[in-house]
Image (cartoon, rainbow, N blue to C red; front, side):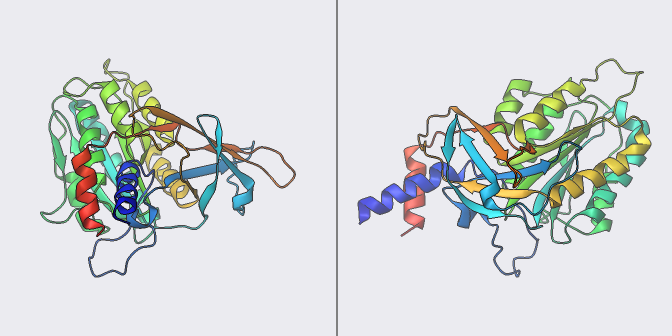
Length: 323
């Protein structure tokens, strides 16, 4: 029995670090949320967006309409949800000098996003230029309070260089404090980076091994030459988010409303991977959604994940907690 417990504990630690989704509320007095990581240990959990060929959202699908493949092998879907549930969201906002004229629109857009989200979502703000700031009152990791969000978004002056990759790394780490089913980053930037310690390859690896989907909004300015929206597109594609490039700053509000609606209309699929090796290798994921008549819908989800490598001592810590 002790050996069995150790095996179970080890597998729990392996997959705890790559559960692919999360979200809930702030107060510790709230009842346990059914979307917490604790009830999903051992699952790969995928947020899945489904559209038809006219780009209309498809609702009403059942578990039997979906097929999941990992590295080309069919997987058994053990979790299926099609309801709007609380999520954890990080708003990662570029406040470098190139973004100065765009800040009023970005702040309005972020507040519109919060207003269009699930009332129980937990939200935090990461402002960045060459420095990174998690902008909420001390001891408050997340909020839904509009006044706190406005203060967090306004609590910096646009100036300096751009540490985009470092900001995403900080935001991905902060997301780990989220308490529920699905996690997202909304990155608003021009994609340039001239001040990070992390490289693009570092950032992509962190994103692929996280449980977050990254939505990105590229706001470009023809007067600046260091913009790189292609970076944002890569991050979104790799994590199952979506990339947006509004034609004008005035469209950013509507863009973030679209993102909020997309998050609320997603399906959630979960499966226990047949490959449980903790080898740090990339596992590709493919999801197929079929209409009742067999036609294929268009599906957006994560391209895959990096399997973790678990140190033996971490397994022993989990074992003690599972006694």
